[in-house]
Length: 437
Picture 1 (cartoon, rainbow, N blue to C red):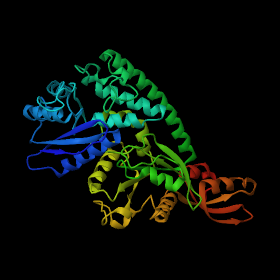
Picture 2: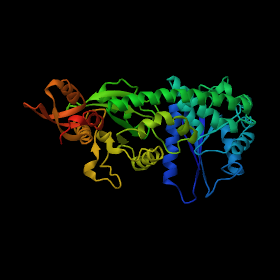
Picture 3: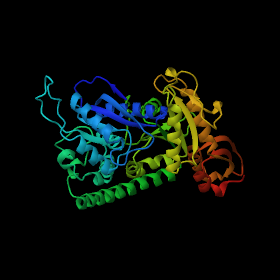
Picture 4: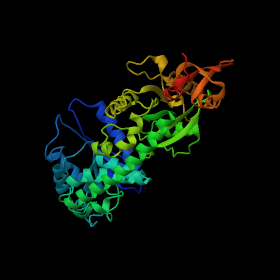
């Protein structure tokens, strides 16, 4: 099955997918998502090719006959890039590129004298890695992307020649580490080892920062969810963080943390995290684990979903599975449906009462007060209620109680100052000497 679309000036590409013979609604959604990924990378789709087959061909994924049909399509339409909606084996890439090598226009056509061109073959994982390379800005982000690229691309280098060099440019070839991809495997392993050591050092610094945050006992809230769910927009709405918020997949890679003062006087930390997507490359998860741990170590995870997306239910499942994989399944979770101003009907989450799901629009501010009220409730529930008797000569401790807790009442007596307050676990430990109940 072949669908043709128009393109303007960007690298032309054909998207290739394999569906079951009975059809695949999930496959159609995945293919549409692949098209959005390509647009984010700076390209546009010229055609889509779908092979209906119950199992993938070991040599070419789509079968030799379909591969030859793909070659003819690339020749006739002067397509430069074939993107497969799967993860191709190294041998499949080599076999496909042999079939697609130096295609030319059919004889007898008006512009049949055009120069032959090679068609590059990349898969879904390579395209996602390319987008991460495009959007990585911090030093740590660039290291993480390069490491993921090296580990994923190294087994796929054989027979690819200069097509992966920096000079080639274009989708599937760029990033902080392309110039290393022409090295032999030994040099690639050495480079990967250097990157891993640098990331370990950065991990130590991040761990130190986390320990400092833990000592302050400030509540940590991670905003997690599918890519383009509106996480950066929500952080900007609440804190004025000024994080780039675009209608693109993976617009944000580097986690951003901002302090937010709740109406009850308690400060919390809000973190905008890397977006999730189905079939996120394993090497990418491993390379970005240090930053993705912001989700696992949070006291509260806001799972943000795009209520206007027809695939929101599937996206929620992907998000929940990845949070579990990262070890964040023991944290408190708050489900928030975003973009409800553009949604058609309510979105439900299996196993969650409808009343427990918040509905907001981070763009317009709809539902913001209810979300903040829910954060206040979580911050209060995190604290324990206690009665303290502070000696009159230690009145300075009141400052700490006000800073680290919520004071409910104070009573100045001859014995000392009787204070009833909600205290954080850390504050409870520090002040335990004066806790009377």
